Image (cartoon, rainbow, N blue to C red; front, side):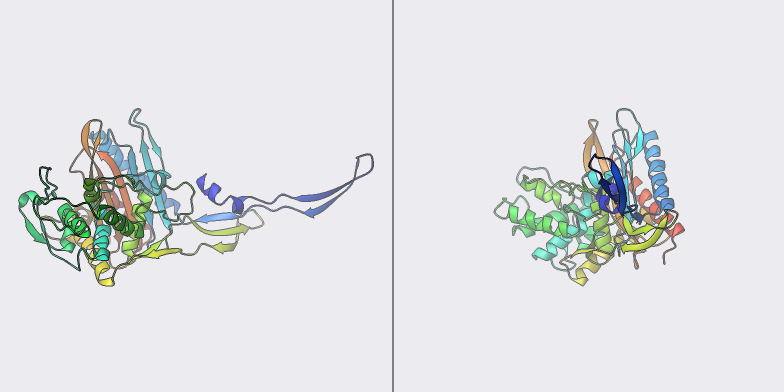
Length: 413
């Protein structure tokens, strides 16, 4: 297994060493034990089997229902990661792989670190961070949600732009999930604020994409998460891109990330801006007389990778925005389904990435979340790609059920 590969030197025993003396005819005269050999050490994992199995059951239940209703025919599966945002301990990593030719469903935990997906609007907290870092916006800045068009091109809009232009704050841009706020922020980063049908100046395109990706990487998006498993994908961040790719990347429609990277991002927001490496091994133990778990040899400590370059005030805006996504009272609030039946207050950012599958329009319906909102003890990412129900909120239900299950098994306050 991948875990055995990572911890091979720990798990392998040491061979016995013997000294053998031969006479002049090559016959063995004596054997002396130099070292009796030893068993390999044991690993204790951070995952709790009851919770891991429960998460897999939740994924199977919802995916099977989506298959039955014809929404998941072209979907390659569904993935979820849960981790402790304070320590990085992985609480569950689960995946269900769907063979779109045969319809077969198989468990696929490793898909959470090896498969990349278009994330959609879940990244918008990281986009705001890039805006603040680069001085493109300040604090809870107000901008107009409006159609964004450049000479002759089709307009970029938010899902609610059709109801008329409106002034919104950074916090509301998260709650309502405004694409056009993020695009205007990206244009500000280039030093070319939006005016309708403006001419495009690409002078600062590359430096601006670098700044955007640098802010994303501070949350683990497009960077190694530092997990204690080999062969992790660092996401898909193409070196070649266009001006349009840069703008859509600001709302999660270009670079691709793994579910593990999305969970690390959720955990980083949850704990106030410290990126912590996820880990599956809690400790290394020797053997007792019966070959079971003996004394603790090494405890895996929390590994801090970096701090996000953000003020407390601005991180508080992101956290308040994530709370409003679930608990806001506007007609434009995007994640209220997460609050229906929540056992503890959930904060989240939802994402709907537009894709195609089987020649049809489809969406990746994704969520990054943490709970309880005011004292986070679990951070979750759920990715459900290529769902052909364009208004599906199945990932919201999966996320809520995962958090509720964790609370049921490990009460949180």
